[in-house]
Amino acid sequence: MKRNRRAKRSMKLKINGVEHELDIDMRTSLLDACRDHLGLTGSKKGCDHGQCGACTMLVNGRRINSCLTLAVMHEGDEITTIEGIGEPGNLHPMQEAFLHHDGFQCGYCTPGQIVSAVGMLGEVADGWPSHASADVKAGAALSGDEIRERMSGNLCRCSAYPNIVDAIETASAKMKENA
Amino acid sequence: MRPFDYARAGNVAEAGQMAGRFIAGGTNLLDLMKLEVETPDKLVDITRLPLRGIEETDDGGLRIGALVSNADLAADPRIRRDYEVLSRALLAGASGQLRNKATTGGNLLQRTRCSYFYEPSQPCNKREPGSGCGAIGGFNRIHAVLGTSDKCIATHPSDMAVAMRALDAVVETQKVDGSTRAIALGEFYRLPGDTPEIENVLEQGELITAVRLPKPFAGQHRYRKVRDRASYAFALVSVAAVVRMDGGKIAEARLAFGGLAHMPWRDETVEKALIGQEPAMANFDKAADILLAEAKGQGENDFKIPLARRTLKAVLADATKGA
Image 1 (cartoon, rainbow over the protein chains, first blue to last red):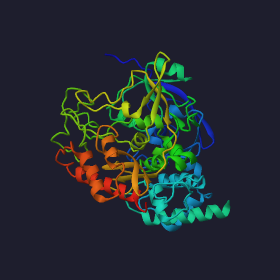
Image 2 (image 1 turned 60 degrees about the vertical axis):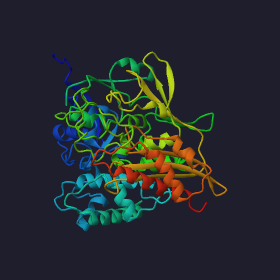
Image 3 (image 1 turned 90 degrees about the vertical axis):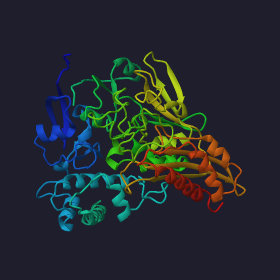
């Protein structure tokens, strides 16, 4: 039986503060829209099933897996990719800290790690508890255990985890200083 | 992924009449659509509906909008203060990224992570009724030990729903004709029986609008989840517990279990057996005997039966200590 579905749809996406108009297949994930249609290839496709975190973006300030959402569902949202976090010559403290602590080996998971870490620190600042928090009623201070738990959605197959945790601790302190 | 039509629901009343598959967080549905396990002809995007609030109800409970994210629900000060078991269960599930996207209604409706369900080349009565069950006699380490049938031994993957089951949550819905109903979570899910493809009592086009919690239950709240790694994994066994002591004896015990069955599992005869008892291991063992009397392993998952016993005893010991 013939499926008569309209394949393409025009949509407007606001990414890193810039409005884009796209005419793309309805099935396009937010990740593929950025990578394949807008040249924003910083966000990576690892598993494409929400298991690895390499595709992490911020939507209205909160981190999500951009591979597990349709681009068309994000019209009107403020989307931030790694390109919107910082750029050569104007790095975000999180990016500087990853360089300083050597928080990667191959680098493929790194954009997702950095975006996720920035989103995660926003959650901590908002007083969100985690599975590692001793008391969910109280806000949690950032510790190694808290970072490991809160970053468990970002896998690193090179296993640079100890340096990633160090980088996030350093960046967190730096960001507090700057605030 | 198969092509589909896409439409946005502008209000709750029209959503059900749009004759499509609802999508909200999409973290499970899109995953399954990529694998062509799910092949909806039409998606109805409900994310713009005004269902993101958490409001207090007249009877002292809370009404949680169906679109409240798992992250926002876990972080809500009222949930953390009065329904700690729910906050704990949510925080034990998925990852930070997924909790930001996944919704309350969608979490209730997530599908099993049975690997035969996820693989279209394999038999699965849930995905393709009548095709058989690959897990029976196959790889079944993560599968159910209670309430199974010879058609399906899948588990329900949610942590949130387990805590909500212990808390006597009620699911509020709107049907296609605009009428509404309230379904106790204990009546919401179905065991697999001969029709494992039917997982709950929702009708075609019926939309979950909210989940209602009754007024808070006093006592110690615990959520203990045993899994293959310390974070970001589904439960092998989980226990949600609210236990209230009085005069050194158990006055009330609400217990629900994840990882054991096709639905969040609750057996009130287990709870009744604990009431009036001292918090002693022998009494916890008797409760576990009742819970697991009908438990049946499938080979690779046999370990879940003693694991459920030990987890229940550990949770009860922890929740009653110092009383």
